[in-house]
Amino acid sequence: MIKKMFSFLRFKIWRMKQKFQRFYRGFMYRQIKFTSTSKLSFGAMFPQSLSVCMMVQNSEKTLPIALESLCNIYDELIIVDGGSSDSTLDIALQYKARIIYSKWPGNHSQQRNVYLREVKTDWVFVIDSDEFIDKKLLFFLRLVKQREIPNTDNFWIPRKWISPFDKKYYIAQKPHFPDIQCRLFKYHKKLSYYGQVHEVVMGFKNQGKPLTDLSLYHLDLFINSRETRQKKVSRYSKDRVEDGKACFYLPDDKNLNLAVWDLDEVVPSVQKLINIL
Image (cartoon, rainbow, N blue to C red; front, side, top):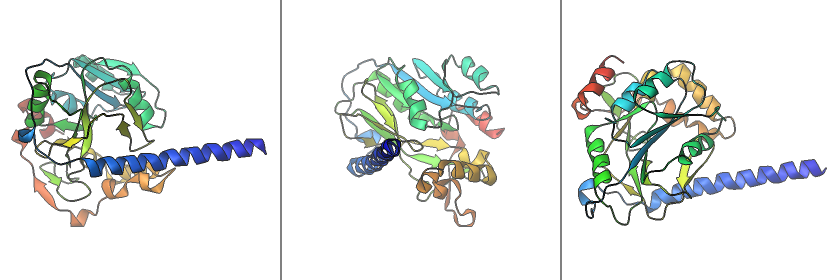
């Protein structure tokens, strides 16, 4: 009887945490005001350090694109590996990554908190192994490393989902665009990720700023078959149906509003890698 009562209480606490995380994510989205990099106020020259963080597992297909797009902008590259059996780690070492081995726990926040605990720099930029950045975002990261930015400790960046049919296009409609992501933030020890699947980082002191003129590119739909994505949705939906995000991973292929993105927006070395993908 007592065991059942404790199990019930643990379940209720878990549900309360899930509800709070959804509320917090929605609250943060409503509070942020869309702006552009041209409207930011920069302070004096003030050198800042930057860590790039990511978690990986068997990511050899796209990891070179992600890392090459960064052009060694980082002072430290921290990669948490969940147990890769392909050439992922060899690729990461070519880019001077510090690799942390952490068996995949089935929880995205737990895995991301592994790299947060290792950060020793002023700023953190988070990128996934199936994403890449363009030259404009790269320039902004360089600016962040050079200049003080007052009253801001977290930036949200629009993400473009590359079309499942043609890598020259991205999906230019909701929910795939703008799909803003909190990926660049000042580091302090109280920051932590929450949420089992679609995690959110909490602990910021200032209101987030989405930068509408920057872009992060996502290759998931292009590199994965619909069958593979269906399995991902099923896996994510195990505890909560809405965590499956079927609207993202299984879009209506016949009714997609597509827009062209310019390959020249990325550095030449990334262009070559994308062309052979």
